[in-house]
Amino acid sequence: MTDGKREDDLLTQEQVLKATGLSVRALRNWEKAGYVKPVNLTGEAKRYTRKDTQIAQAMVRYLGRCANLQEAYKIAIQGISAKNRRNEKIAGSNKGVSDHLTTRDPDKIKLHPRFERLLEIDEDLEESLTVEMAVAGYYPPQPIVLGSWPGLKAPC
Image (cartoon, rainbow, N blue to C red):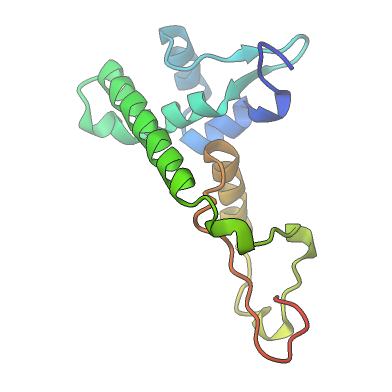
């Protein structure tokens, strides 16, 4: 742990740049202005919290509609706070609903041969989704549903 944050909860500069679409120069400028606050690990490159990355993503989205960076930052903070309140409300309302659901290791999910060609994975899309989920987190109210039908031993 560093500065009260677990290292696996922090993102690299490369991940932040990919998630936000910012240039290295723009990210440095936003750091200097205090919009993004890197966590310095001893002997390692800077890391960034998920929250700061979410704020930077929101700022990028709002920049075209705002007069300046400060206004985009204020709107981003308000949007992130509202999103967190909404997620807490959803999580509270879903208590007990997921009791009958099970979790599975994604690597152990087998794709049925009938569906292999239907579900080809675009590697660029997979990478962007991985980064997005690392930044924003996984949204539990929208689970991955595995298909099953009579005669099948286990969902696939």
